[in-house]
Amino acid sequence: MRAASNLKGDETVDKIDLESTNQLLRVIVAILIRGGDNPMSLKQQIEILSDAGMRPKDIATVLGKSGTHINKELTGIRRQKGKK
Image 1 (cartoon, rainbow, N blue to C red):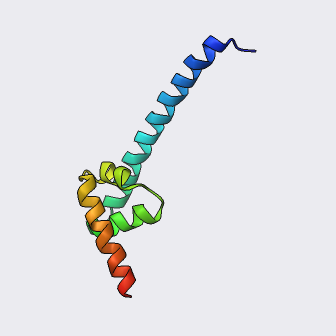
Image 2: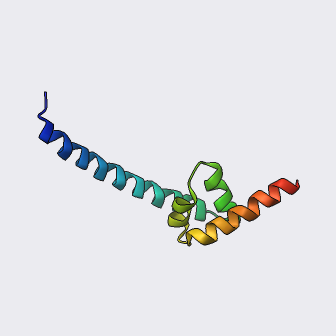
Image 3: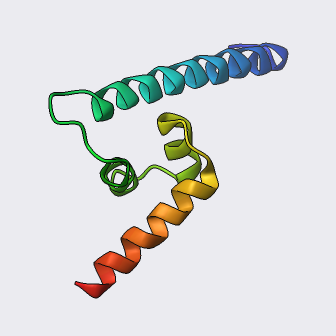
C-alpha cells in the first residue's frame, strides 16, 4: 500500500501525462481536419468538432482561432440549423 505522501506525486505525474496526451490528440485532430485533397471550410471544421463534443475553447486551440471567433461561428451554425 502506498503512503499518502506518494499519492500526490503520482497524481501530479498522471495529470502531466494526461495533459501531454490531450495535447497530442489536439495536434492529430488538427492535422486530420485540415488535411486531405478537399479541405473543409472553417465553419465545417468547427461544426464537426462541436458535434464531436469539443468545447469552444478546445476548438479554438485546435484551429488556432480565438474563442470569440469560434463562439460567433457556433452561433451562426445553430441559427442556420434552426432555419432548416
